[in-house]
Amino acid sequence: MAVSFDLFGTLVEVAPPDDPARAVATALSERDVSVPSNWKHVYTTPHLDVPPGAELSLVDHVKAGLESRDRDVSRSVVRAALLDAFKAPICTREGAQAAVTVAKKCEPIGILSNCSVPGLVQHTLSQSNLNPDVFDSVVSSVECGWRKPDARAFREISVRLGVPLSDLTHIGDDPETDGGATDAGATAILLDDVTLSDISVEMECPE
Image (cartoon, one colour):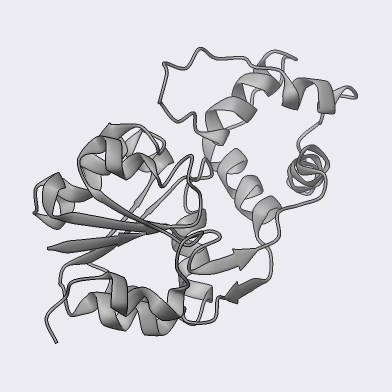
């Protein structure tokens, strides 16, 4: 058996920017990027086609938006700006450390998180009270290319953890995304039904 956790809303709480477009514009301006005057419209307008279930990197989206207004900005600058724009105070949820400790008895364990900002999952984990080294694999949607509830996202974490989907238990807070584990052939434990503190009761791990 293997266990994967959702990150945002499950193991940690992070408040996103109230105005993402403005936060991104500020971070770009701090890097001497000339931000278009109609940036909010540019930011909220789709510029690239994305197949159903696929994740679009926010780096690609922002870069395409800038290019649509004749701004040629390197990927590294856009990526750094996005990381700064979406960094926020992190609160490790009550019961998260205990739940991870219990899950570790099942070995291996991992994280499967929907996140379109490259590097943000790893940054968030490193700033939390959790030990990143405990996790055998950390998979973000922007890295693997697929967003939960797409079965390919769950398949990716199961492959990395070295188990078939039938032996994967996924723990998350969102029925619409994390609940997709069930349709993918794994087992879903949703925090709507159980608290992190009660996870040990739900998981069939050896003592």
